[in-house]
Image 1: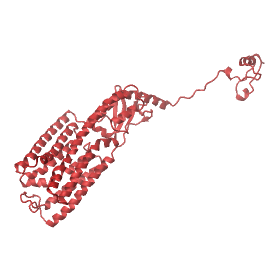
Image 2 (image 1 turned 90 degrees about the vertical axis):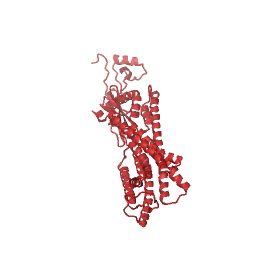
Image 3 (image 1 turned 180 degrees about the vertical axis):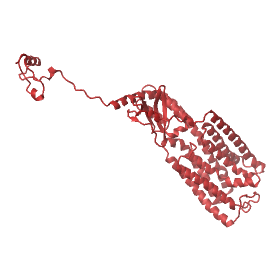
Length: 455
């Protein structure tokens, strides 16, 4: 068991950007915020400049969705440098505004808008599966996203090869620069197949998001639960729009509901992200509440229970450093290697004189390293007491239980009472004066008592 402490890696605070990294992140966030402000301003001004001003409510919803994603992306980028969540959210906001290129006269702007106007939905799915780390968690999710990006890109490019806006009834539209040939029959067949497949893909992505949530641990579910809440309105809008585009003919009122009002459901996503930040603040408040709970003597295991509740990880384990074993032991004093299973990580807690304990926690808590450190620091004093108790138990485990001592009576008390009913004192005098052996002395293997001066 020697050297078990060396198996514990340092707490991964090096994932948090240093001073230079934070400066670069702040500069990038400033550029994104400035570009987002300009893009939103142009989105508001473009319809009016073309002489086709939108209804103020419609314009507010359209621009508000982009502003919500870009603004929240900037906040996420500043709060979690090195995490791609902020970049994904900002990308969704900018891609949402790609459709506004339709307002710009010119074939290039028209072609870009027609090709990528709906690409934001793919990045939205990427955000749902990568939240909160910004990285896709497994091979299945990566394959899903590679297939989804490939489908959206190839499907849109193939559509543009046969799409002639003039033949589709848009006489005032610019030319499609990607047009190769326009065949009405082939275009109709391609649109029908694409529409069914697009709807199936949207539903399948929704199922993957639910599966992604269902297969996670309880601690991870707590963190990504807002994503599941936000996925409902977003999927409802995307499916309804797909059906309205290709399968039904809407009235003017229905078209306004689908294309102008329902996009507001997309703004739920940035809102739930902000709700997640609020829940994190509440978790910091719970850390402060640990102090009175862990003050003074606490029952064995109480520290673990308090940390598990604060970090929302019921499977959290605590191991205590023991100088006796030169390694870590559990609460019962049994040696344990501080090795985390897949999906979990080791978070050391140091004392004033060296290592104190380690937590085996869900790796999702590394998204809030400051919260993890604060919880460990708040529990440090109580952990010292539990560590001492575990060390005592470890000594018992190492040495084993003490043998039970047999209680021995004095020799006089072991002398049996002779026949005749005399007292013990009289018996003793008799044995010294005369010669008397207990009837069973020889059988028991004990020494015979002889009279003094016996020959």
